[in-house]
Length: 253
Image 1 (cartoon, one colour):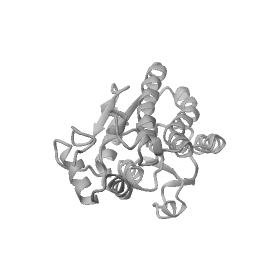
Image 2 (cartoon, rainbow, N blue to C red; image 1 turned 135 degrees about the vertical axis):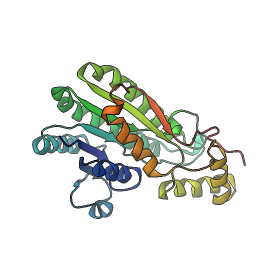
Image 3 (spheres, rainbow, N blue to C red; image 1 turned 90 degrees about the vertical axis):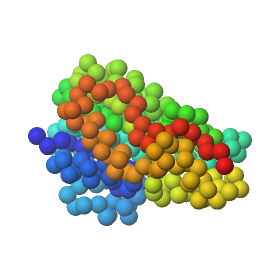
Image 4 (cartoon, helix red, strand yellow; image 1 turned 45 degrees about the vertical axis):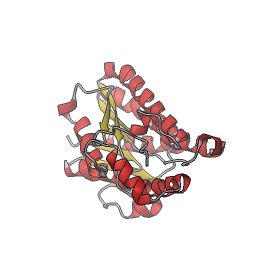
């Protein structure tokens, strides 16, 4: 039977790499995203929906459609997230804080909440949460993002404990610094705060890993495919970094 895989923020970046990697295994793929233009560029064979992951009514309606069309769900990738503000804590406004936690943390919670009944009924499933190395360390200038990612790991650990008796596994992937537009935006904002250059920051982040390099979205996608596979059938409740071994998340320039 082909795996049935739902990926949030699946039209771009890490999510799109996940969708492509699962599709390459023969899985049925359903992507949701808040970016209508990006969704329009996805392969026609992928099911697609425009969705705000923090809208519970929309999430519940989507999962109802998934159940009606597919009859169940094998893999849920809670991948949606936003970077939030790059600022010192005293300069973070409450609205930006709340939006960052809403998309990252509440989005994962809502999709898990409305997917779990299907997985329980079939007594199988894999939930993969895209966290971050910011969910393993303190991360200066990124308080909302780090707080959300730490909380997502706590959510995952609890899901693993609650759902294990039903044959459902839950794990977190913690990407390090991933090549792409979102990290470029973070680098630009942080360079302005620190009075340095984008290139100097890039070099500092790369030097903070033992492999001296950023990772690519496909590296994260490959881990997701493994965690959803039979080869990982006893891997649950784990926080797995795909980061080239981050030694120093706050490069000193």
